[in-house]
Length: 63
Image 1: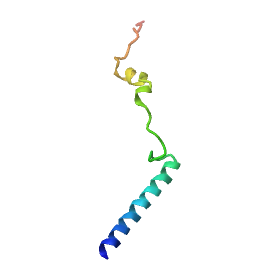
Image 2 (image 1 turned 30 degrees about the vertical axis):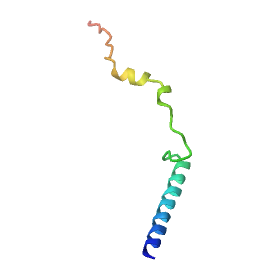
Image 3 (image 1 turned 180 degrees about the vertical axis):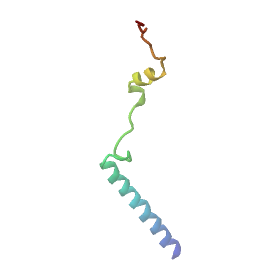
């Protein structure tokens, strides 16, 4: 009988965690089940490239 109670408790905790994560997903905090992952190969890499380049310095004029 104790094993049945333990399994019911585990099922209740898992179900509650799933519902909590779905609620958080609907508010935009996490991606859980209903939102697919973004295809990172389709994302632009311009920002990353600009971070890795050396900064171009303009020549300064001296009076």
